[in-house]
Each structure stands twice: as structure tokens, then as C-alpha cells.
Image (cartoon, rainbow, N blue to C red; front, side):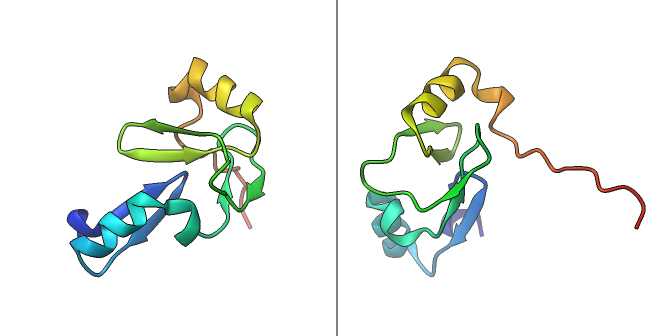
Length: 89
């Protein structure tokens, strides 16, 4: 349900209750798994030192400050994941 979910990069995390949501929001890097940098596509585990930007209702972590700077210039270009087309299988 919408009251018990948190978005980090392209990942969605669901919590049991409001207290868990509040705890997750305080230190999301501690509880999230690896995420995808929205600029470089690199998978990495965010830390307290990872660059981050809030955009819309989502928190984005970046593998490098240069990626955060690129995102900040045009968030709409990076906020939605690009899914490669694999054609007919």
C-alpha cells in the first residue's frame, strides 16, 4: 500500500508499518540493497557518503558525484529506467 512503500532509485521497498517507513527513511542506505545509478547504469551498494538527490517522491543515490551533477541538470531524462528492447524471442 502507498503508505508503506519507499522508492530508492528504481527500487521499491515495502514496510510493515509507519514506524518501519520512518526508520528506513532516516538511513535508507543501511537497509536498501544494491541500486542502479540512474546516469551510468552501474549497480552499487549506497553508503552514507554516496551522493544523493531527491526527485519527486523518490530518493536517488549515485555511484559518483559527476553522475549526481549530470542528473541534477536534467532529472526527467534519468528518473525513469530505460529497459532495453530484446526483440522477439
